[in-house]
Each structure stands twice: as structure tokens, then as C-alpha cells.
Image (cartoon, rainbow, N blue to C red):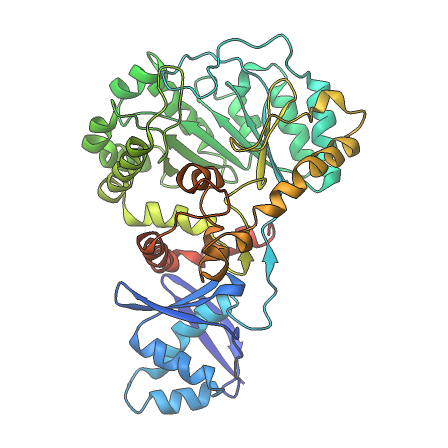
Length: 460
């Protein structure tokens, strides 16, 4: 036996590999070239490798059944650093379990619940999707929320995301966070950050796995024009208070509009660099690509929507460091975890009145957490009402997705977009450009994919 140090990018780890060891790979593989690299995809596993010229030669030898010793000898005839090449390749193969015997799982549905615990908000953002103002008289009580959360745990739920309005408007918000954490949930808070203090940050930092703070401009003038005077400083203060809690991952969600896009183009990079230097280098940045109808924001036409999304992609490529964009994308893609849909039912929203919302495509649901006698009946009604719809929207039933080697990565495009574009949720308006973008994405995120694997494997 021989201990080899297997490396991938900046990540290094040791794993004992015999020089006589051979490897078996998924039977069906496809290959593409992107960014002068060989992209090897195992479609049924939703897994992939990215190889340079020599690594590709080594992979082909391994695929023929050669051992590590044999590959080193054959590759060494033309490549002086053959074992370094093999080491880098095996770091990918073993780190991502690109193996025939690897366990493949399907991305679960109904495991992530966003609960809009109140429609109340202390701000009046110009683009607010829910037109949040004051709490509604029919909002769920603390007892009703906790009844649902306990039932969701028994059903197998994994993540609770508290949203609003502004969730911290609800007096029992902190109590719900603490109790959800005690029940074993991953707890996420989506907030405008203006109500976070140094004192209550301790509760959030110790109980929330993730906190997402909204900042809608790269400077105070831009943000405050959207969210209100003084909100930029208060959101930055919230990030400072929370940054001292290492187990609470922080992100900033930024939503440009046509009116604020010039300010983002001029100052986003400077803002992010300042934030990482002066607050925390571990804050991730998310820029919203799709702008939906809001309080003072009319619905875009299809052409304007597509043009705006292109503008946001160009903005991110120009203003954000590559690792910022690619690390975020890498965290969303788990090797050997198949995605069957466009996000339908992977997470769902319980509105402040207890009503259920799956997505814009779905009709109003009769399911309400107030109207069920117990949690078991709620989830029984939920799966009864939506199970057939979810099954019918699986990517294998889409055209032309069923034969695409990317099907279990992208899950097919948004079913509502399919209806708008093709008149049928199961006909996807996919084209060669869309697929090429995905191939390039898999190559770009590959250096960052091993880093977060340990964090997410337990949640698969």
C-alpha cells in the first residue's frame, strides 16, 4: 500500500490508495470541451470531472481498467510528472465519488419551508414583492406556527426559513428561532437587518445557521433611496454584530432595478471589497437576476425580463470576483444528487395567514395550517393536492430534456416559463446556448466544489 497525497486546487487531503488499485466509473459518460478543458459527465449520477490534457489521458487509462501503477508507467512515457497528474485526478474522482458504486440520491421535496410569519414591516421598500406594511389581523399565532413546525419535523422537514415582511416585527420571532433550532432544524433568517442589535444578535448568531440581509445598493444613497433613510448603515451594523458568531453564515442579498443598475455597475465591486475588508471576508453576495413585480415596480414584458437578466449576468461578471460567483454556484450543486425539477416543491411558502404557496404556476391551495386538526393531516392533504402535479413535472417527462446529459443538474427550466414560451409546462425552451452555459458553469465551479462537500453531505 502507498499513501498518496491527493490534491485539488487549494484543497489537500490524504487518502490511502494502493498502487494496484483500479476504479470503475459510471457506465454512461458524455464528453464536451469548454475553456480548453475536457468535461466528462455521468448523466445518471449528476456528477462530472474536469480534466486537462494529461488528466484526460490518465482517466482513459483508468477507464480501461488499468491500475494506478500501470497508469503511472504508461503516462510517464510522455509525462515526467505522471504521479502528480494522477494525484490531482484521483482527488476529483474520490472527493466527488465519481465511481460506479457511489450512492446516488434524489433531491428531496417538501424539506425546506419558508414561513412568512408576518406581513408587517418597518420599511416600505419600493420594490417589495409582498407589499408589506402592517401585520394582518388574520396572521398565525405563535402557537399555530410552532404546531406547524413540530409537525414539519415529524414529516421529515430539514430547514425552516423565517421571512416576512420583516420577521423580527413579530414579538415571538426570537422564541420561534430558538425552538426551531432545539427541534433540530437548519434555521435561516431573511431580514432587512435594521432591527438587529448587538444584544439580540447573540440569539440570532447562536441559533441561526444562516442569516440573509438585504442591501439594495452599493452605497447609502442608492440603498436608502429604495429602502429608506439610514437603512444602509443599520444593515451594515447588523452584519458586524453577527459576524462574530462563526457558525452563522452571512449573506447579502442585493436586488438591482432598472433605476439603480447604473449605480451597481459603477460601485458594486468597490462595495464588496470594502465589506470583506471592514466587516467580514466570509460574507457571500447574492445578486437577484430576475426582477418580479413589486410595490412600485410593474411587471416586465418577456423581452425586458430577458434583457434585464442578461444585464445582471454581465454586471456580476464585471463587478464580482470570479470566486464570489463560482463559490455560490458550487454550493448549490451536489455531486451524485439528482435534481428532478425546476425547484417546484423543493421549498414551499406558508403565508402569514397559514395559506400554502408552491409557486406561481400552481392554483390557490385549499391547504391551510389553521384548518387542519393536526400536522399529520396537513401534510397528508399537502401531498394529496400536489403530489400528482410534482410527479407530472419531473424532468424525465420534459421535451427535449429526457435525453439531455444535463437533465439532473438543471432539472429543466422553470415550468411557468415553459408555459409562457411553449404553451406547455413539459416543453422546455432550451437551446444550445443554454446548454453551453451549463457546461461552462460546471468547468468554472469545479475548483470550488470539494470545499463545501463536508458541509452539505449530511443534508443530502
